[in-house]
Length: 324
Image (cartoon, rainbow, N blue to C red; front, side, top):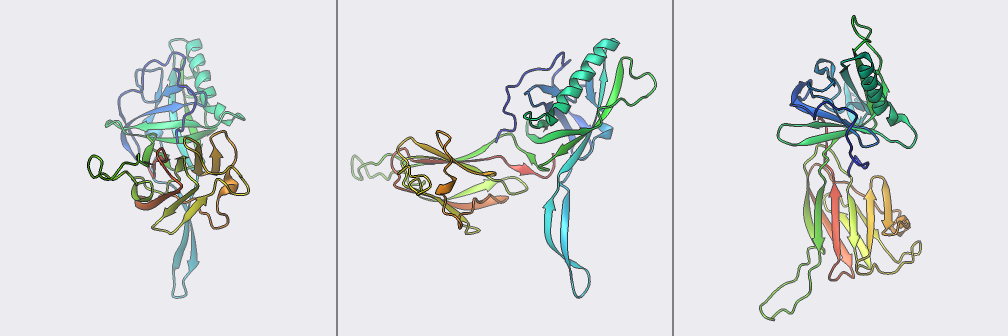
């Protein structure tokens, strides 16, 4: 799931690109960018730009904070019952400067707007991205909380100042922007002895191993392309499963025809036919469980009744991590 849906544009007078890697607390050498809700990308670690990160004050990039629920043990101590991931707050100091007072003021105002617009109704969060020298990247959605205020230091306010931002993250996990996919498709049927013995693909009707390289559970999205009369996905490790009937009374569509698509999202739970119709009523409630993928290997089974040439299943997810 891409985190950035808006077209990417450049900010006014950026003064450079993302910059070379700089040492950041808790994570080491990296470059950082911020993408505001409009899609504008702001470099944060370019020392040649007219704003850059004061790395010594950065915090909140490490492991996810947790709230622990425990039960008293009769022989002393306690036993952990549940660990609940909590929203995280990232502290990010920025230094802003300009050749003149008005140039500085323009940049200060533009950056303030880029962060505070995350609180406007209908705008949505911004995205903080940490990129490593090897090209890997991790992102987290952020909302401005506080801190875009001058520091009142000697010589500031005229052509330079710094702000210490607090960025609130409702989902505390970092996400890989590169989507991992698994594709299974029914092959074209062929005659067994003409011209040589052949077996058509039947992977769509069987088991497969899906590897989640992240640190926590991910919630995949499934796209099923017909033909299919019944759709069933099972997680062999947990026994959880869900079945979608395109001809259920709540839908009444009939079999999924060749080329027709239905998308099943596990977070938030949602089932949509290709025209946007809500098919959530076609699931086998109350036993249906829209399961996630645990870290590591997951044994899963795809089963499409009434499948044929062109039938396919596409599973997609973005790994999630504890740290940047």
